[in-house]
Length: 200
Image (tube, rainbow, N blue to C red; front, side):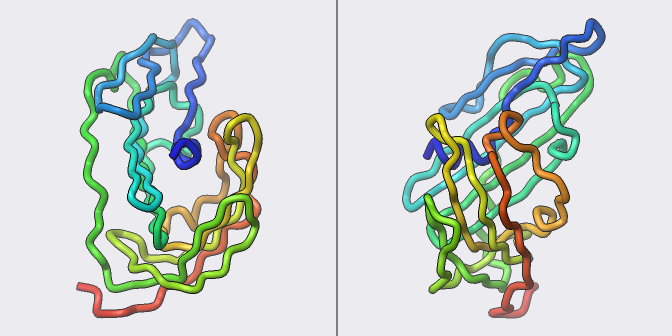
């Protein structure tokens, strides 16, 4: 599961200027209470993410300085046949504004009447989608993603085809390591899903 957490977690980077606000810096993968040291930042960021592979699922919370504006107030989800990610980021700009416990919202698993080709492979640059997956929630696009993640000291290739929220397809620039654990984006191709039933 560490690999999947690496995909969705944004690391803290403090602001060295004398101007700014105090923000907690912490990471927790067991409870919604995340406490740590304080850093001087331009703004604070809280990331709540949940990922699963097969029958295993882990939720993580990270608080830090906001170092990449495009990742503020941004939410997305990805659903493949045996793999999923949900991500929610919020930013604020007052002293200790993201202190305290964070509510981890349950993943939206309501099928929306759309389906996409699905596959997931590690240490690969291609995967053959020989099955489909039902899209859930706000996932209205299919994605074909290939890239590499920093995992256990090196960058490793991953590829997947899955349902995805449309905002991922519209993102023009993705932050790379060390701001995130994403080393390289080789391909992000989006397409329209197939309708399996009327969308209410």
